[in-house]
Length: 336
Image (cartoon, rainbow, N blue to C red; front, side, top):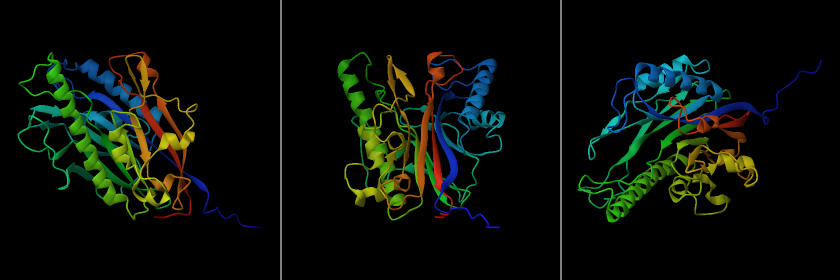
């Protein structure tokens, strides 16, 4: 009897990677923002339980979370889920931004795939970046929200890099002396915010350059980019601007665009609703190892979708973002 041998070139090892903006995930009776009421115990428990249910709906192997004020809150939601209750949690509590004396919620990564090495927190700008927004007394030196970088091992022993992002919002960056009703101050505060977003994007791109170039271990960058896929800040992180296969080595590609083959008729997902407009702010970007035109391809983008029904009900315990989930298929015989 002929013995069946699996095809090493078959794309049949499936994983899912998702991104989930939790919206102000904090423990009860904690004042995370001056203009926001604290959660009662009942409100917190409702949010925790909804989050656990949504984690199960995603059923992802790796999830990037945003807006974590307390690691304990994330731990309780993850442990309350069915699909990730035994997963590894890489997270940290909110940190205080000294120049503003405000708390900044953090990004976290939760994985049920085994870690290949200790996680890295990308926090500092490189020495190449020196940007001082108008009104600041000194250059900014740190990424607004630190970027967790984990390396996990797939069932075929391939090492997969996953970085989690939450890029600064477009909200104007006012100084204490400025008047929010003054249009001149508004313009300057908006410009200041733009500078910080751009500086963060450059710092992340510098880190990716060192990770991606001449390295054929696949990489996924997922999170809340706070802008669409073709925004300048997003494209800075993706490394676009030079075209041709010779530049694939350090570029990232929008998994949704790969999956829909750039057909606008098929690009119908959304993760945020602003003034009635449907937008995609929560993205999954991938390295050339997922691209069909790369000679180093070892994986396929099978599907990318959003869980967004809750955006239309606006319940207090839900997130104001949809969750993006990308499904990938890896070659069985490849081991990076």
